[in-house]
Image (cartoon, rainbow, N blue to C red):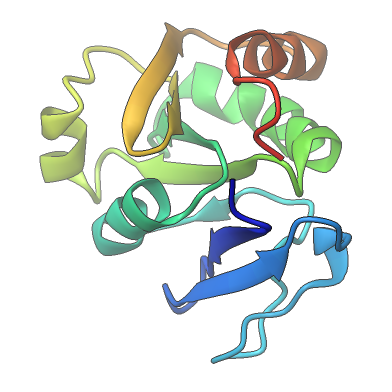
Length: 149
């Protein structure tokens, strides 16, 4: 097993190596200098989505949402709170289904909000509907494989 995590920067998309024993909360991107974890889920585009899921070694939780979606807006503070609880062991990102329609179609999104948990380039769990922060955290911890962080 690797002694480091591969963490994709949400700002520039570069893959960064972070030693497993290091507290990743203070890690910065080697290219752009942005914090790798901010305690807030970052909005990403389709290219960054593919890099997060395809190149990073951390589990990735993706919230598929849209600006006009009432339940999505209602769940946003809970998703932010979940990011504070789960980072730096899980990457939390947001994907706007209006801006990234091709990715939403590829993921077979039928309703929003939908959260999809990926690990090692594979979808491992999916759930639709608004949830509280504790429900999100519990659902993620229930589905991530042990020893992934």
